[in-house]
Length: 571
Image 1 (cartoon, one colour):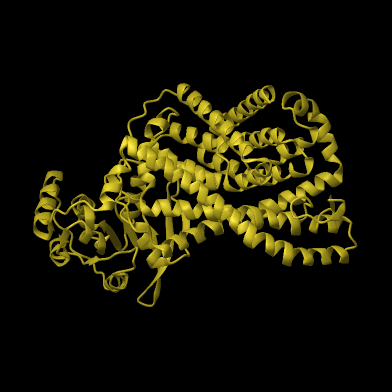
Image 2: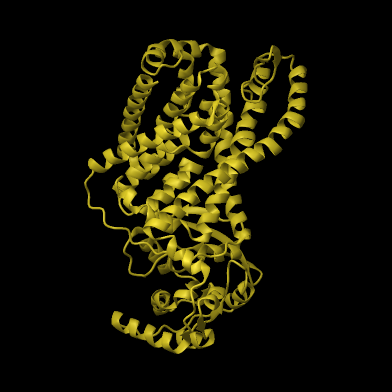
């Protein structure tokens, strides 16, 4: 079964309702275009379901629409998801699908919204005109989904109508609309006024700034609350006694002990195990992922999903379009950048929505160099916040300046034509918390599958480096660079090197070094600006190719060295 429709009509919500959580993201062969695959139960059988990339037409104008056309050409039962509040525009694709003569059902989504907007649609008359079943649904509320599944079970091949010229298609759309739809003008509700205010330059900027500040305040509040009220009590009260007992069983030392439990540290004159500094698989390895990073990732993706489903992100893209043009990007690039604050990997994958290779290169480079992921931010907050909020703001301010300067350099060195943004702005919608939870669960599962193995490998690698004595060799080799150029102790070299494996683990290595606050700021910023983690690097190679990845790598080295020198001179 193929879910086909325009962008922003609620296809993903319908897909989630039909298939549940068990969806898989795939790339179409030979492209970077991504789509979702899942399964649903239909007539007692398991039926594959594909969420086809959103398209306005079966005459492709971009890579995503080209993939959509190829998938439709392969055939199958088509579930055409239509925005009932924008029927006239959606019917152009519906009529093109009808020309294919495929088994087809039309889902009139956002049916509840039509009542709020004074729109009345005779769906039975629309079904007669189209010659296929038409089912009103509200996917967010789950209304009409059962009826939709019942109709899909009996979907039959409809006879294809005679081909028409493009002008005739729009004449037919006009005829259909006049017969099946009636609109009664309604006074603007508060939601309509908010929609208008959020895209105007002055009021939209105020609303946008407030939304971003509130989002990051919420992320920090939720993340810190989960750490302080849930994770720390669990690890300190329940897990550490188990680890301490294991430590005694293993004799308090030795190779196996140091790998599993880690080393003892002195805290207030007492020799003890520490969740952050012991660097064992069962101490630091688990605590970094679950105790320090996961709460912030949970909070970030909760906020991002809410902003997506409400319909605010396209408005933010419009507001930031002028600013993003200074960096050589469209306003829509703000979405990959925001995703990068959760994890750089999905952020770089999301650059596929950008039109040109040049835009994808600029966005991916900016994400990998100047956008700290949630786990890295969690570690930075943990190290800098105890010394005062001003050091946290200083680190972010330096990264913002570097990010903006680098974006301008990339724009000036690549003077390709960049047209204005053309982006549909959906109405504000009430989010479905069921859908939000399913999307959050998928993202958290992906994060854990990617993060846990890398962090555990990183902890083992750190232990082996310490045990082998290689640390002293590395520190001695880079000591002149670290002390004279960056103003950091030679011991910080290992953190910069291991940042390639996992940056949050690398920042954790700074904790035992007793660095001054300004040194922590410099080291944290340097770790952010240098090579991204190995997972991000792998994605960059796949998305950009080795030549553009090599260019981005050169920029990373140049930017990190320049920023390190300037910070050392200033501080």
